[in-house]
Length: 155
Length: 253
Image 1: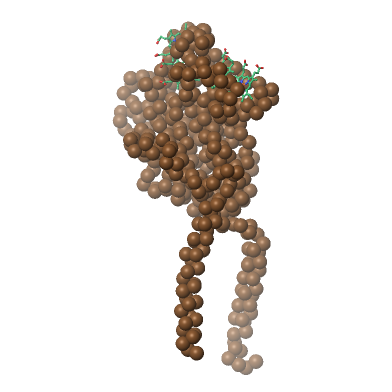
Image 2: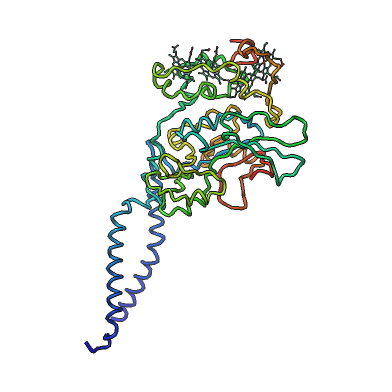
């Protein structure tokens, strides 16, 4: 070999190596990147559906009212009417699907109310708060029903 | 001969120029049909959250509900949490901030009434930024902005490299110790795609947190945004945050 490429052979070898590696890269990319990647953006579209599969813990207030319309009735017009049932009763999706499967625990009638109503300077002044003297150790339910507290015990 | 070659080059050039917009248009058409759950079309929604500091009572129900609903691990891992601010003597550069156990068990009284300071609660969560810094740094596309404006994580694709944890200006991400992948608020994507509200909004007793759909013209949020002075956190970062705070104090970071 005496042509002009005489001194370029080592360059051609390197170039061939690069081309070879590039082809390998293309194959690897085709094999590893999911087919629909990038359909909506730089991510796997299946991740959207995967994020929706989790089971519910909280059924939502509308579900409770289906069966416990009497409770909803007694809350009407009260200051507690806006509060979701599960804010006080905890997550009850299994109970809502099958009432026998999960028995709701009744909240402790004192500590539980104070979780929201205890005096705290960081709370908005418009929110009604009570100090330790308010009930003097009696459970709040003696004088306030939980579903319509300003209407006296148990409506 | 040369005439036809010129023609050919011209039309080839035009075609080449058109493929870009055509590809974009095709993407748009396809994503218009993004069906992620039965009866739910992602393009018809644009989710965000409204947080009203003026009515937050710091009861911590949202933190608890979030952990329950999303199986967030015990301990110092939170998808949402509540902070208590105490701004003494009007020095808003150095507020006293605490968040015992993320506010999960509520807040014991620490301050005295009438000490001349300002004190209030600030619920925090992922801001679901429209152009999110965390999405930009992900090397594999495992975190992304969904077509309905929720920043989600592809748990099966995440490497656990922690770039996004560093990139989030709001500190909303953590590494799940069980899987070693990243976790964060998904705006209860499994709930909102079924027509329910998020767990935190479900249990909020005062309406301090409200899920909002900015694409729904009937959503009361439009009226609220019009009549209130609403802010986002760190607006100077221009992340397109969609967590709107009413009554936000200048001391809140």
